[in-house]
Image 1 (cartoon, rainbow, N blue to C red):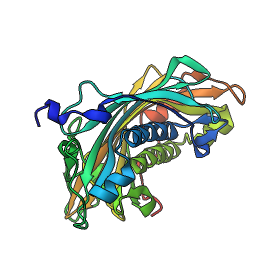
Image 2: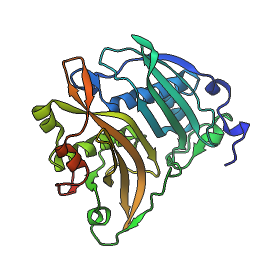
Image 3: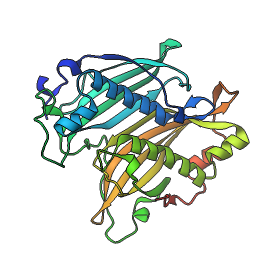
Length: 327
């Protein structure tokens, strides 16, 4: 679609929104720090609040017009840690160079106690997915019509081909190299609008596949906490929806370490596939970057370099390379 004034946010949606928001208690897993998944939840809630204040609340869009608000791409950089009682203050604004057919926003969040330093910077792309069920919806308002799609997926940011498997083993087809493959049946509580896996579900998948990968390599999060007082920290993550995964699909998640940088950070790729008619169809892809920090006290931590054990595990030593999940 060619980018024109008709395919950019118009009217109230084109205006920025200032807001205040707090992290959820569930995200405070290690001491009082908020994990990357719940930082992304803050970003998601900020975008939803922007839509709400600008006359496009998710509930009304669905109930009146049959439009499902889908976070289809979320690219988040965490520059400073949030703690459980922090108040985040920030702004949601339209992304200046957004492509046509999508609502794209920048999100900036600061800690109220430290307003001069950006804590979180994110880019979020939203699509309005038409609901295929029912015929009682009202006509979509003209300023929203350019953003209505029939599939919540976006074009892949890089090549993510489908994988034919026929009657073969999907895990074997996806494994190899420095990868870990995990299969899990998608539960209803990872879904929204009745049947489709939503962005927060993929954030959960990303968090869990990292946990399973580290345990498979002999450097589980608990082991490094118990033995070295180390925790993983995430400065950057991104997930893009490519196609729709549905409730009770068996989703195959491939976690691949792509780069270890000077024993200071490592970047991994996550690819998710649904098996359909003998073909593994990509439904989401993303990257996540980790470092490690040593806990100094209940408030503070500092970054550390990887030791030989951790570096060896990240580079491919040990592990079976697959899991079957819990579903």
